[in-house]
Structure formats: C-alpha cells, structure tokens
Length: 104
Image 1 (cartoon, rainbow, N blue to C red):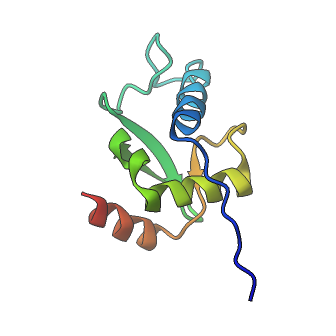
Image 2 (image 1 turned 30 degrees about the vertical axis):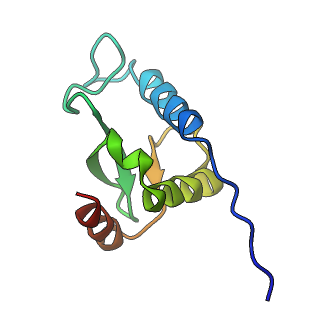
Image 3 (image 1 turned 90 degrees about the vertical axis):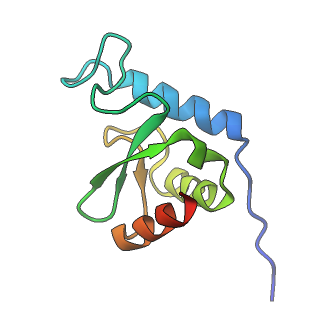
C-alpha cells in the first residue's frame, strides 16, 4: 500500500489567498469600503459548505488547526481559490458543524 504524500499549504499563503479573495468581493453589496463583508466580525471569515452552499462565519484561528487546513487543501484541489463562489469547503454541512464544534 502506497502512502500518499500530502502537500502542505504554508499557513501564510492560505491566509493571503483568503484575504485576497475577500477583498476582491468588495464590489458586491453587503461589503464595506475595505472590501470586507459587513456581517462578518473582525477576526472571522465566511465559508460556504455543502451542496446548498450554507454560509458559516468562522474565526481566523481555525486556520491554524490541522483538521481545518485539510479542508482548505480539499477546497483548493476541488475549486481553487479563484472563482465567484467565495471560499467553498467541499464537505457535508453536518461534518463541518461537527468539526467546528470540536475546534471551539
């Protein structure tokens, strides 16, 4: 059985891509002059999860958790970071809720 080598995305690169994506959405309604969503508190970011693309607001501190980084790697593989849907996490909503509850 071969062991699959997982490419780790440097944390700073992930954060930069997320912030770049957030600021590029600033032209849409619901965003302030800095390009940040008005309903997302400082220190948090929005992600979209599941088939229905349910929106979740999560703390930036989740970016340091290995489990969340795995979800980000899957998101990059499946969607990339350059698309019109926002940061989309390819995982079932129930699984995402369970993971975020464990990270709290």
